[in-house]
Amino acid sequence: MVSDNLDTFDLIQKFPTSILRHEDYGPVFNELSAICANKNIGSEELDRETGLKKTNMNKVFAIFIYCISRQLREEFYKEFIFFLMMYRKCLNEIGWIVKAEVTGVVVSDNEKKIEFSVINNGEYAPDVCNDFITDKWAEYLPSYNISDFKVVGQDTEMTKNAVFLTQHFCNWLNAQRYTNSRLQINDENE
Image 1 (tube, helix red, strand yellow):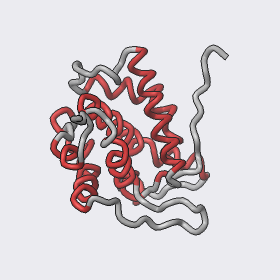
Image 2 (spheres, one colour; image 1 turned 90 degrees about the horizontal axis):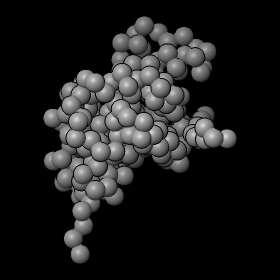
Image 3 (spheres, one colour; image 1 turned 90 degrees about the vertical axis):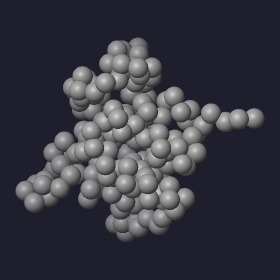
């Protein structure tokens, strides 16, 4: 039986660099390349106070891609990566603001000069999800050539799929001890 799923080699070779800008994916691609070369994610340090892994979000995105993508069909891989890189873009745009709101601690100007996903773990990643879906997702899409996408995009059904991916990603972060937050989708009909 032939599998249509991706193998470790495919994760790098089929990474959709042609539809993304390097600043959208570069650090995650580098982390994914290292994981694929070693065929393992390496060790991750735990924060003794929170019990959460200290792994920065660029590596967390790469780990998620490595763990989940090998179960995906090649046709969806490009859309899956695009979705994650747009989530990363949102996290880098508003992550510092959200972290300050959640913690009540003012973020220094020096910290703000560094991309959020470079030095922060997944603790605040779920906190950007509403802004991502309601504002940033639709804002980002027109800047990319995604006309051949079948699962995620701008129409209502495709945006719902982005919502489900967001929930899956954030709950995976929780299950893997990157955040204490879990997402639950409220049904509009309730």
